[in-house]
Image (cartoon, rainbow, N blue to C red; front, side, top):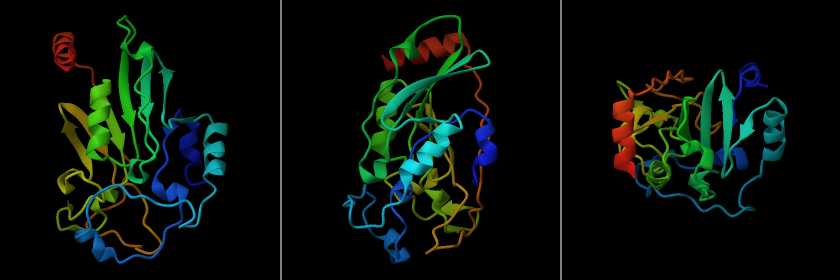
Length: 218
């Protein structure tokens, strides 16, 4: 219901850990010292949420699930080639690569986009290897509790805290990490990290730069 107005537009989605399992109380200070590695969560150790119902609702409004799969959307003459993974934080991710059509060279403008919930370094690296030209992720909440100026203390993954929100680069490929909108009911606070929804404008490279970049990746 909260996302309903957005569903008037075409969209894609991938799940995160709190789509699968309800939040539980934990010592928030542990984020300052625990290893930033993916979690292994047994299916019965947390309260499972009705994720299938949520995904059915998204798809009934025309959004495309990218759960360890690729897909293509054509919008106003632009071909969007997507590659998405299930949540890397739970180690549910299995990279599908991109559709063969993503690498067709023709007159139709196109862009290859990787989508993941948690921006672990292995995930970003794999998207780059697969040929992504832009990557979108969330999960970090922008650090959620930050120092003045919005400087994140942790990212809740192995991404450097300095990259917990905004645009950075992974091997020359732009990565957009959203700070997101909400909080956990067990940590209902955001400090120096306001909620956000991101509007990104993609601008084409000139042909010479794009050809040089393509040759370097090969």
